Amino acid sequence: MSRLRAEHLYKVFGRRPKAAVAALEGGTSRDELRSQGTTAAVIDASFSVEAGQIFVVMGLSGSGKSTLLRMLNGLLEPTAGQVLYDGQDLTQLSPRELRKVRSQKISMVFQHFALFPHRSVLENAAYGLEVQGLPRAAREKRAMEALEMAGLAGWEKSWPDELSGGMQQRVGLARALATDADLLLMDESFSALDPLIRRDMQDQLLELQKRLKKTIVFITHDLNEAMRLGDQIAMMRDGQIVQTGNAQDILVTPANEYVASFTQDVDRSRVLTAGAIMAEPASVRTAAADGGAPRTAREVLAAAPATVMADTPIIELFAPCSTSSEPVAVVDEAGELIGVVPAARLLAVLGDPTRSTEPRAVPPGPELRKGSETSETSPANPANTVNTASPANKSSKTNTASTASTASTASTANTAAIGKGAGDPAGAANDGTAEGKVTAGA
Ligand SMILES: Nc1ncnc2c1ncn2[C@@H]1O[C@H](COP(=O)(O)OP(=O)(O)OP(=O)(O)O)[C@@H](O)[C@H]1O
Ligand SMILES: [Mg+2]
Image 1: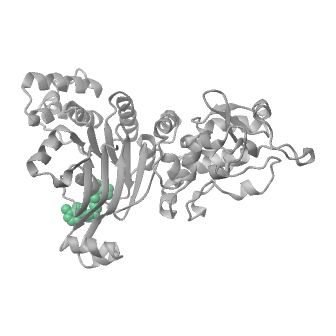
Image 2: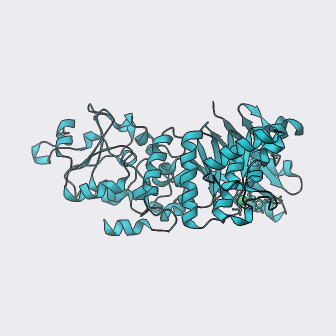
Image 3: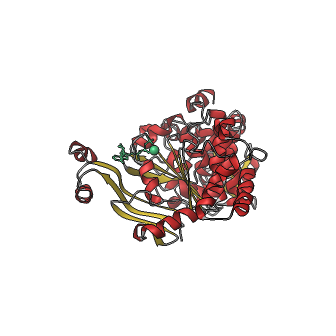
């Protein structure tokens, strides 16, 4: 069961909000409502977050992210819909019950640090525990542990204004960690930090998350941050969630032009993995003159310029692909062939994703169809898989690539892969390095 679920959530600001929800359900547009002075901030948002996941909500300013987040902890009452936390409907709780859930189970970390200037770092970190009514000794002990986790050991007696912005944000994080709340809601928590510090904080959060396995909803308007942190990413536009998926879903099968335009500047070579773009092993065939039959797994493996795992970032495939006309082999942990990446496919996925308005099963591109290769490449659509070697549909990654907006379960491996790519000091997390450079250089 998912830890947190939002079901058909709406938040309308202005007059007659319930009537506005009915109008939205009947097809009235957000703009029409706005012309009547009513703001539909969140429209029919549904999603679920599994325990231990980082669920990122991403969208431009005004798209409804903060409003959505505030409904998740009951700070804002939804106009319609439900928020289920551990199966309990938060929208049905009394104010008192809600306060209890909020102080014990849910923590929020804001963009601006919200520290008390006249309290020490330790007292600030212990604040949530004070609200919970914990005795001083117990809360100081827990706050010390949380400060240590946030990398602030030794700073507990300092005052907030003695700390840099990044360190102040760590105090905010420590405060959230100290309460032991399982659900962390983070609203643009790193957005005020300069890029390098921000990267550090992202790394630290991923590191902490490995140990603590909290359930985190993280809001950002930065796609690279979303891709680094998110096991799942919900893309919001004008109050609506237009796509939910992992980083690879969003990159490989954007639900529409809007999502695709967001992803233009992402360095795909570091986010995408071999497993997400591989073709079926059976697509590797002998030359037409020799009958054009599928090669055996053994032949493919023997000829491959490199053998990689499904979670290898595709940036590592360029060198081998440039030295051979044979595809790179993708194997599972047992060493069995599960897919192949021909050079043409590698180049195709770096192509312009905005060409298609339809969600698609495979990264297309005329490159794939020009037939300049002797070996044919066929779509990684598992439905078409008829081969006796290891079918590509064993891989959840390949499945992922074929589902436009279904929640994927391949999250852990993805996060690892993304973390690896983006953790590279030469990576392009926030510096806007465009895929164009990679394409040009490839
Ligand atoms: N209390 C309110 N009363 C009226 N309108 C509101 C209120 N809060 C938010 N809105 C409107 O709802 C819409 C969504 O706002 P929200 O703050 O959720 O967006 P956001 O995605 O968090 O934006 P940002 O990235 O700028 O923080 C906006 O049009 C905003 O003006
Ligand atoms: Mg906001």
